[in-house]
Image 1 (cartoon, protein in one colour):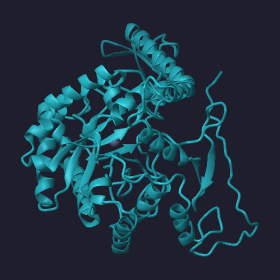
Image 2 (cartoon, protein in one colour):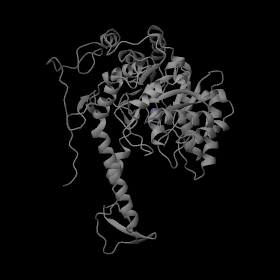
Image 3 (cartoon, rainbow, N blue to C red):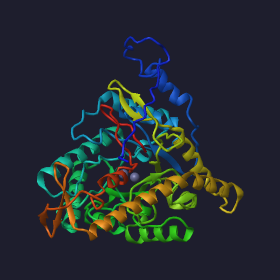
Image 4 (cartoon, rainbow, N blue to C red):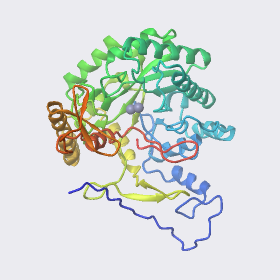
Length: 462
Ligand SMILES: [Zn+2]
Ligand SMILES: [Zn+2]
């Protein structure tokens, strides 16, 4: 059976039958004005904010339409902290931050009591690799990075999270030194801003920087101004990279290792995600809290760990709605009529409340055991699917390693390659062909925040 992708489209119908173009202040898909919709986010949130909690839990929310929309989206889900994109994450060039958006962002943070210096943590662009040593590439990356820091300066944001990048020059030490030098430059260019650049730990190994605590330590060690650098610890990435958080003992050992290798004083923010992929799988696949391989016990450890109190704790969990068969439900959105996954932000609202409720909860008690069991059961099909998929890819890779190496030609034919020599004679495309599709399937499942199609800033998947 050939693989086919079946697109499911759920068209969200307008409430009225008037097909004339809406006035400027009308939003797609509804009759409410922009102002009315904004007011609704605040007056009818999906969950009320918990005030005076020891923890500041939130999510990577959308800043589609402009960064000034992010505080309202945070209120909507009852968040006490939030992450956002400051501009499109898949484009090198972006329009400048508008003065009006900037002042509205300040006003809204004030109105809704978000101290953006402490509890708004933008996520950097996926394109930027400050460890790239090639001149043109590093300048492009540096300019985009510095541009983000300048936006932070104007918005009063002091914590900025980014991926350390990857080694392109076959020399890890050189790449790390290069990254640290770029950070130094960016810190010097924004002297006096007090912005702390946060290295995020990564799931993947190999050329990717930041999947070990030693990498983070080595990068920090080479930066000049240690007050300008910190770490944002992602629980899914840590677990996938081989740092266990599940039992109280394993959690304590991981945090103790972090403290001795990097230093807890550098920990300034957290990404709170469960993992769809198993321990030490090096796959970056975020799961909803309690449904993944970390399980609810890990999050009980996390929220009850005193050093995390007061830090921004950001969910990057999936909120895409699926049907009974596990397929994404789609809707058509925007002027360009693009097909996007239907999202349910109440998932974040519930996860925030769940995490807050775990503080001080008795893990032997009925309430915890019920929650733990229910969430684990809920995630079971997805965990099984991922394990099977990873296993399939591994088996195929093994088979491929044993058989003659093959190379796909542009016309789709497969040639056998033996010891670097092409031998096209008598080989058929068959079982041992590279399972690129499956590889892509796994790699593509990463639920790190993904950009949407907005003009200035983007929605996120978490
Ligand atoms: Zn990230
Ligand atoms: Zn993350």
